[in-house]
Length: 170
Image 1 (cartoon, rainbow, N blue to C red):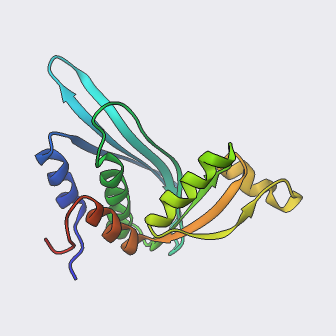
Image 2 (image 1 turned 180 degrees about the vertical axis):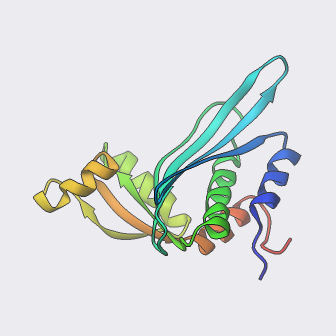
């Protein structure tokens, strides 16, 4: 099965009238990434529709995803483009093969929605991050309490690509 490349995903975004851009910076062994999808506007700056921020360590399980948001009108498919681009970037340019994220627990209803959403992308729970002393380092990294989850980058790429109505290899 042939997975889509980052170039394939950028072309799909362009065909849908969207800009897909990655900002990548490397400091020592940490690579930060920001994936952005925007809509071009005549005579104005592009309208930001969604973004994801994270960082990667040079390890198979080194991809850490921190902030994902989609906003504004007509954003269908924006999240899937961001996820697909993030996973494709990791697979193509880093040794990372799995990603971790925290389904933040701001309130119970939103937390349940996040967990469902991340599970649809193939993320599985690792453990709860709460108020215990042992959780302090993770709370500092992730900025709060919640459910720490891990997902396979290849499976995430396949799932996000399919959610755009496409099959790998097409």
